[in-house]
Amino acid sequence: MAGNRNLLGFAAACLGYVLAVSHCANAQQTTATTQAKLKCEHPADPHRRQTGCNDHDFDMDETLARGWNDVRRTLQRIGITPTASYVGALQTNVTGGRDQVWSYAGQLSLGFSADFGELAKLPGLSAYVGLSWGTGSDLSASLDSALPTSSLYAPSFYLGEMYLQQRLQHDKLTILAGRLAASDAFAALPVFTNYVTYAINPNPFSLGANDAAFFGPPPGTEWGAQATYLITPAIQVAAGAFNTNTNSANGENHGADFTLQEGNKGVLSIGEIDYLHNQRTDSVGKPGQITAGFLRSNNSFPYLNNPLAHSDGYNGVYLMGQQMVFRPGGPGTSRGATVWGAWTFNSKDLVSPIPLLWGAGLSYQGLIPVRTSDVASICLIRTEFSKYAPATSAEDGLELNYQWRHSRYLTITPHGQYLWNRSAHESRNATVLGIQLELTL
Image (tube, rainbow, N blue to C red):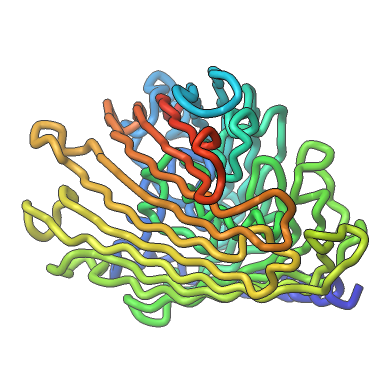
């Protein structure tokens, strides 16, 4: 109960600070870095969009609904920006599993942002509301796989993130408070969005598998507050505190379970530091990012080998980075190869089903010279399961895909995945083929 009071106090303090300074905040945009371009590459797409991207402008050629552009521009002039997208994936297991299954899962995502600088003359203050509608089936359940082959299975309608956001100090400081998702702000690299598997897109899967309060919508969100500060053009720090209501995290009442405490206690606290390498507009070197973070929850978690017994809290850490290593066109171009790696560790395997995960991969934009926007990617994800979890063992996943970018609003991604259990019989292994469509409306 004390943890929830602390969370409420923190959120209230942030909201009070936001409203107190919004009248004198300077709305000037920072131009020192291109970090926003990497983190918010597609601001017109609300599907699993990183928090802090809701007030970024986008060109109308990023959306399919060209005929509505005049309506959109009129709304933007008064401070309201609607966004929408649809993502769907058709997949089948060509080997492995009890039977061959065809699975299709899709999500329609809607987002609405309001700029109070335009609406109420409060510079830097904005609000965001997200919603989603999911349909389809879950292939991973048919394969008995611990690593989901897609992040799209979330049937039914869900409310998403709903928060106030305040930018201060020439956009160096950003504060958010409301219904938030830790996964939309922490432990994410821009390159993760190049993959279909939920094992790494949008975050290392272990973070949410160990604590549902980390996962983002759909299905659920948590009450919380967070802040991000750009210390220098290359160093950014972030911190957040989130409620730990498992029912809310699992999307109870279609994401409208706003109760603070339903058998849970305490808060999920996260701190992160990012090194944004060569991301200034005048940088001639190849861009990269290194991210390190720490998690602490003082909620109560059941033992994996005895659900009637509980343990208080856990500590976790993560380290990840991406770096462009080849750029044939030189500074200012995006074609080339980027390598990345990620590692997560949870200190208490008695309550954490996946205490260890690591992954590595490579993405190459413009592998075919005449298709300079297309991206080819490969990744390997390796997990270690808790010795206390019944009937589980280590599982690995490999993905190879090719993003065919028809335009800025349409991407089609044929992909293949291979899942194997290192200690089980070969029949547990599975080969999955599929195709994913992403359409920004």
